Length: 83
Image (cartoon, rainbow, N blue to C red; front, side, top):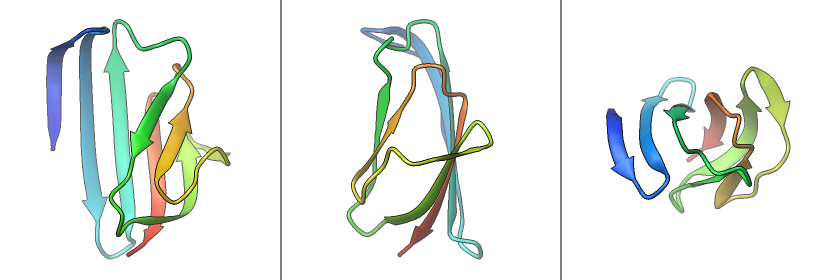
């Protein structure tokens, strides 16, 4: 699922989300003109418990059960989860 060129108060943003049930992996990619310098927060459903997170191919530790804090430079996020 994705959205391309959505107008937000931060400028145009495009993103795509996919889920692979067999590996319980959520893939999320984002691009935009005006991503906030302070970074982004990816909010997760309550049923979704993170086991591990990768940001742009590298392990990422800045997450908890409910959200992942991301740098503004992020392009792709892979989340290993337990449901």
